[in-house]
Image (tube, rainbow, N blue to C red; front, top):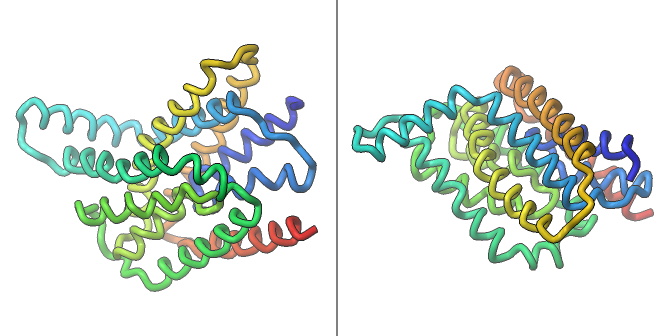
Length: 263
């Protein structure tokens, strides 16, 4: 694959990874419109590393607080809001981790189709719009019950076209959380999820040779920079603009995908 194609795909991955618009829906567009081939496993790992770096850097102070509080509790200190949140992130990660391990083959065989991606782009986009319209948007602190429900909802992100950030934010909004609180928990939750996904993909590289490290480093850097910019802008504007711009975008994207697939 040419360097310009890899650069564009890395940029596309970074721009769409954390917005509630589905990165998988966007990554089938180059193959549909331009006939580009799959970028390969090594490149997938690289852009995952870039995305992980972006969210860790943006939330570095918050993550450090959670890690310190969690470590202190393990050492015998009293519980705190930060240590509780650290546990909640772990609990919310368990469902998607188990589902990915147990159902990965089924998903790869039956759900990775263009029609599924187009359909889920539209359906879960509408669900996001309904959650933003009718959610109470009053709560801030994530409860144990909410973390479990959001974690279970995250399993749906294994369906291509759903959007991991989209479905977790949708679940939080339906539970009555403010947009900013929903977005922050979704992004923090992405850290263990992307890390586990990246490690799983990396194991597949053990049998591969001839890795082009320069290309992968560039891909990781482009993906990470784009993702960091998206996270910063989304967190700054989410309370003001809401989710409907993304809902409308998803509906238009889904319609475009259906047209392209039909032809």
